[in-house]
Length: 446
Image (cartoon, rainbow, N blue to C red; front, side):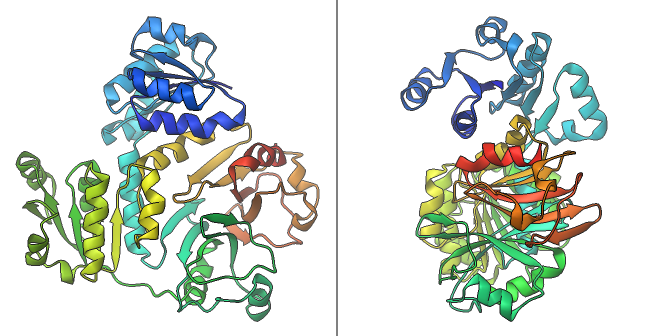
């Protein structure tokens, strides 16, 4: 596939790195010459320094032969203009990163399509939804739903309370024969393991599990987790994510939002009816104590500064807050954050990649989750007529090394993958995949 990525920083670069191993021809258009020099040093990607809204720059990038044009600049006006021009110049499909959720209504989506924008991604909106989901299920470090929740991915960090410690998957299956979930990966000491029946769970393991809705209660029990009710929430940062999160939870929870910028605070007062807006610096420990941080059930830090978000979340945990969620934009900080005790994070680059990568697949993918903290994805494939996976039961399928089938959605029903299950045409299959196996996994479903 010929892909053009228009960016102005790390989002475009991260996306290009993810796609570069899939035999795509990728061209990056970016105004920052120094960044492009660094990219050229570390990759074989073609780069063009320039403005993606320039017709001559798009033509230099060979837009007429582009199968996919992706514009993820921070300015949505540039993204819209880039995609409109790109489509008129011959790009087969275009995707724009946008921040104004007004464009996402059904009526306005049609307007954007008529202009030449085939798909839009709003990372801030997805991030806010992800935060709200995490507040609703406090026992999990990461959650992602497939097929409207018929199957879900849960990330559980195993501590001393977990009932599965030092037990193999075979032992657990023998003791609990009717479990409606399946472990698809274990992350331990910076290594990701696709578990076999003989593998044991250890303390501090990160267990990635595919579960049906009726399996969640048993999953949390075996993981030693208890669901905690969230009533009092403190949000640091009144930008788009903070505002969208507060708007979604303020009628059901007691919300305090701390923002340094006075003008933004005044704007937030008009937009949020039931949220207490505080104009202050959240790095002030005395202020946090005065505002009752010890009584908070959740603390969400979503400023534009990753260091501030990490620091304030550590402070919140020190004060006994049950759930701390920072926005971390620097992917290199994710491992560090988890190693110092911050389990749950939000990253807009991974959110953007999760939305866009599926458009580059040969097989039909309805959902994809790029996982934080490990280099892996969980995908939901639609099984095509005559696909290899329909030829024999799961236990007889030659699954590529570095991948594992977690579950299957068939119509309104969901199933956990077991050896004698027969996948059928039209099924949706949720599969955990390490990067080196993605291209081979796609072949299973075509």
